[in-house]
Picture 1 (cartoon, rainbow, N blue to C red):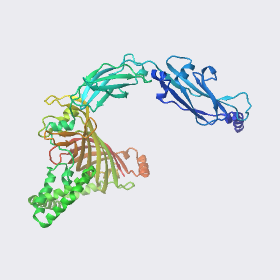
Picture 2: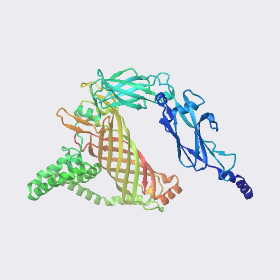
Picture 3: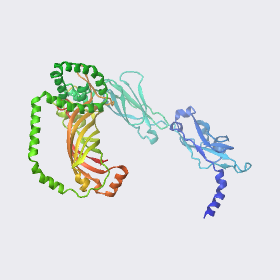
Picture 4: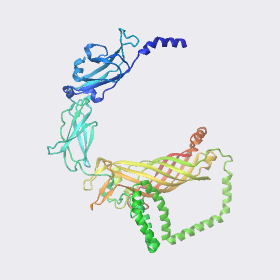
Length: 594
């Protein structure tokens, strides 16, 4: 068998030694199409190719891959490497088999002598060279029409229709023109628009504009102008503008340290710090020095925090427990009551301790006798998603409309979250502390400003975005799942939240609202709150223990769960005015013990 392969190799060796490859480069779309103007101006294009062959001759043919002089544009000597030749429209048409509009094929042929027999009378041609296709089109496309013009905020959306009986090559694009009605100004133009709808921006509200279009085919022939259509841009309220115009109190923005962290100078927790300052610090010399130092150092700190939403979140997590302690110092009777309740609870538990022996004995008697070997568990990673809607956002006191319902159709959208927690101890279940961050977005259409009670949807898009940030304490009763292979794990969790939000207008910019007193509000900020949840996890290891063990050894994933949880979040700034981003719903996800 080896001898047969060797003989085949020897027989084909001369052919292998001689074989050479020619690479011909494609033309760009602009170069491959010739329109009426290109033909009139005798447009030139450049053909390019390369090869390792030497001592050769090149031929450029039209509509023919054979060495026929009738269809040759040019020929010449070629000694390898990169080469180029400029061809004109008149050259191609003069040598084409078909002189009419349509496709023409250009061939680059290479003729070379055999290297081992320079005197051979049978030169070799490179075969199977793909043709370069060029198109000649002198016929302009049909006239298009402007179907409709929809007003927007400082903009108009133009809807177009292709000209009647347009071929596929005619449906390339449009040139769209506009100018103020009743003027002879030089029109503005959007060229080579490739879709049948186009948004013209930068216009002036309540000014009427004339709009017309031309159709373009692939060869860039241009049709006659369409009939003129008119449109008038109108003021559109995005969500935040409509909310503020309806009496909403959310001011947006991020303020100074405690004020900035909690999103409002009238936030209840901000009042706690102010009350502690006025009650204790101002009444002592040391306290006055602390106040003086705070006001000297706080402005740059506030600027630093203001530009970093994540830092604002963690600042809130640190300041909230401090605020609770300060509040208790301001309310000594409440502090005393809490101490008495704690002492009384401890006494009751101690006296009842003997009554707990039997239940505890039964519980531990049922514990598994064998413990399976697994890698150490330290961290947990969770990925979850669920429907979210700020269900109380339209219930704000003082609102004259229901902005969320009218603009977003009361929609709920999926909120996605990614969490990381650290397992503090693993005794009778697992107790963890962790963080979680996510993203949520809902899209709606703005409302035309009619300066009245009537509301009508525009085509301008407005977007409400939220990044939820959480600090969690979690307890999972996973003792039997880990040690006895019972696959169900109930759990509870709770913690503090900080929801960063921002609202965009039709241009994708942060929404801005100016009231009758010329005060400007921006549609971004943060709301604090808390959450609690309870759920049930299912241990996936129970389905295929062998794969789970391999997953543990290879990647350190000790246990894998899927879960469903009932989730309640109260995100109202702890009772402050403005947005209430609270929500109740179900979340589903995946949890990995690592």
